[in-house]
Length: 298
Image 1 (cartoon, rainbow, N blue to C red):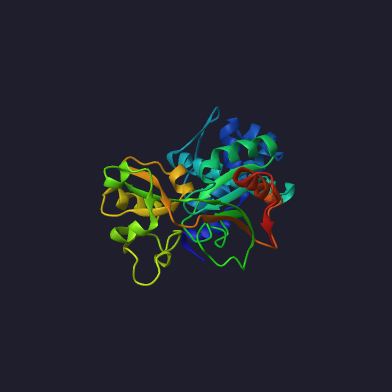
Image 2 (image 1 turned 90 degrees about the vertical axis):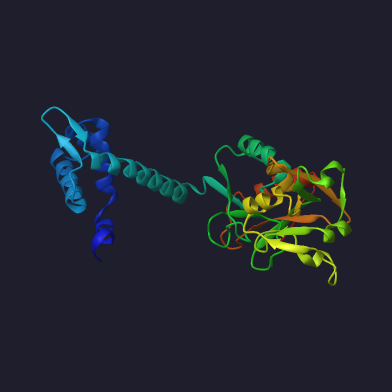
């Protein structure tokens, strides 16, 4: 390996820690004391790092140490690397200190804020992070989260899962659409309009209308694209209540849809490597959606 790849392979955490310690303490002597090594070892480590990078990182005088322009850039990245290494060690040695819950469009809809608040109160030692990933499994299949909120009709067979609730369907439309003056819209009225559809992560399909009686479709890429198309007035969209609760946009309004079954909301996770807090998350989500009844899971 050569070039940048070779340099990266040669840089070790000891180099990064040494650079940060020198700058933070202001001297090689104090850095050596902080790191528990000799001053000579600090000098050798920094020299090795500068040799690997091919740049001078510090201006050194008999009285002070200051980073060069290259050193300032390297120091910023060094702090990020050290924080990441600390997170890695913490999660590997203490169990899981963070719970990542992925979702494609919305997390827990109108329950999202309350879920976050109650989680913080009940599980202060496990940081909750909600992440949006525009994939059918909300990032779970890609290894980006520990659990995922799924509304899309995917095959649940590969996953462990729990149905935590359901959400009514809503119609999204431009705020100046004639339907915006109404309290609700019927499913059988939609075929007269053009429907914005996300075939990858959306919850609506033309199968809602049997035979060839469905609406015209305009396909979008993600929630932002979907909302932008609807705001123009040339399309309407169908979506669960969760979207209506979490995505309020200027130029777009939501009205209840009558005549369509609600959308089930599932939490999914890996059967063999589930996060220790999985059951707690399932229980809390279920409580918020449906009361204290136990969720159906496998």
